[in-house]
Amino acid sequence: MNVLIINDEKWTADMIREDVSWEKCGIHKVFTAYDAASAREQIKQGDIQILLCDIEMPGENGIQLMHWVREHEYEIECIFLTCHANFSYAQEAVKLNCLDYILMPARAEEIEHVLTKVVTNIQQKQANRKLEQYGARWIENQKQEAYEIQGTKKNSEAVIQECLRYIHNHLEDTELSVNQLADQCHMNAIYLNRIFRKEKETSIGQYIIQERMHLAARLLLDSGLTAHTVAEKVGYLNYPYFSTAFKKFYGCSPQKYVERQEDSHENKD
Image (cartoon, rainbow, N blue to C red; front, top):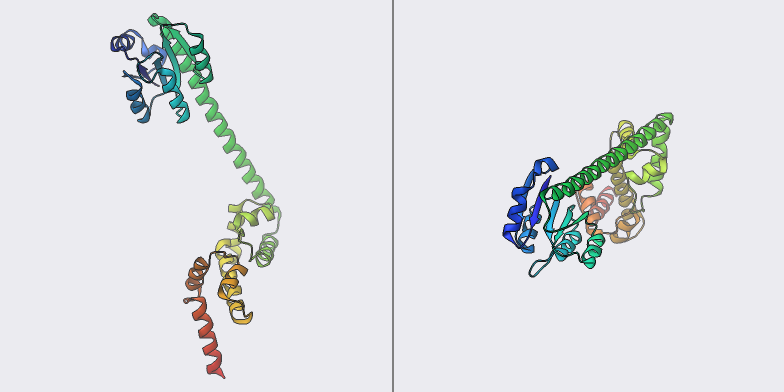
C-alpha cells in the first residue's frame, strides 16, 4: 500500500517521511508533493491508496484537492493534516468520506496509529469486495448449472423445434437473438447454442441470418415489395446492412438477384 504526503512546507513533509515507521503501518512506498498540482500528477499515475494531506496550502488547498479526487472517482483514502482545529474543515472532511483528521504538530506515533487504522480499513474493504465478486461468480455458476440441468430434462429435439418455431415466427423482430431465444426457452444461452449447433450443424445466429435471407429472396420475387420494405420485413432497419448481408449470402445485391431470377424464367420460357 502506498502513501502520498502533500504539504507546501517541504521540511514538514520531509520530517513526516523520515520519522514515521511506514512498514510497521503496512505502507510499502511513500511519495511527496509540495502543492496540489504536483499531487494531482502523481495521483494520475496511479498506485496511490492513501493521502496524508495538509489542508492549508497556497492556491488550491487540501479540501479542494480532495473534491477533485472524489469527482474523478479515485479509490483513495485521505487523512487531513492541519494546524487549526477548524470545525468547518472537520465537517467538509466528513462529507468527503475522509477517514481521519490530525492536528499538527503531531508525534510520529500518533500518525502511525491513524495510518494503521486506515490501512486496516482499506484491507477490509478489499476483502469484502473480493468476497462479493466470489459470491457473484458462485451465483452465476449455480444459475448456469441449473439451466443445464433443466436443459437436460427437456428433450433436445423438442427444444430445437421450439427454437425453430420461434425463429420462423419472429424473423421481422429486430431484437431476435440467441439471448431472446434462451429467455423464451428458460435456458442458458451458451448451452442452448451448443445443443442447437449439435442438432443443426450451425449456430443460432447463422441460422437466423439464413432464414431471413431465404424469406427476403421469396419476398423480393413474389410480393412486389421494394427491397427497402423487404429488409424491414426480415428484421433489418438498416438497408445498407441488409444489402451487405444479402450479397454475402447470395453473391449479389437484392436488385441483381431479382434481375437474374427474371432472366432465368425468361430463358426457360
